[in-house]
Amino acid sequence: MKTILIGIAIVMTSLAACTNESNKSTGENKSVTGIVHQYFNLKNALANDDGKEAAIAGNAIVETMDKLDTSLLSSDQKKTYKDLQEDTRENAEHIGANADRIAHQREHFEMLSKDVYDLVKKFGAGQTVYQDFCPMYNDGKGATWISEIKDIRNPYLGKKMPTCGSVKEEIK
Image 1: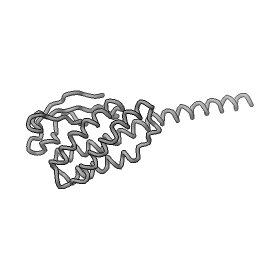
Image 2: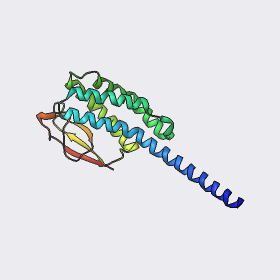
Image 3: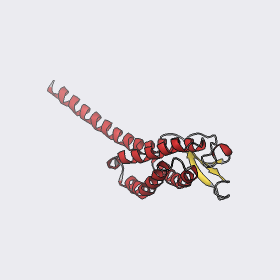
Image 4: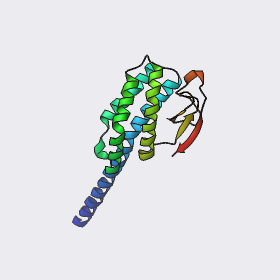
């Protein structure tokens, strides 16, 4: 009987350790996917020409970053996050502080999109996402963004040219 109890204790301890490791892996993904989720809210607000909603989403990105527990990240992931953190925060803050200046929000969204692309490539997004490209934005220089849907909903040109662009890359 004693041997059986010890065996059960060992099995339970092993299962608990596996569950904790699984939660740690899930936690690191959820940390960054929260930022990506708020980015999608921002992208959709800009596609709808809604500077106020874009500002709310920009502020939500900053709040999500403040809550991110980097202790759950591997050392390589920590380095990547640290490299992107300052610029990501600065661009999200500018978007959040400029609800009445959608052109300014879009300028910062362009830079933010580059950082979010790097985050998605390193950490994943928890779903298939698409890197889209608008050739018309910024006097024909073009710009990219990340989308949760395959259909084009252009955040740079909004309702003026809602479907301008193409899918450049599918990221799984």
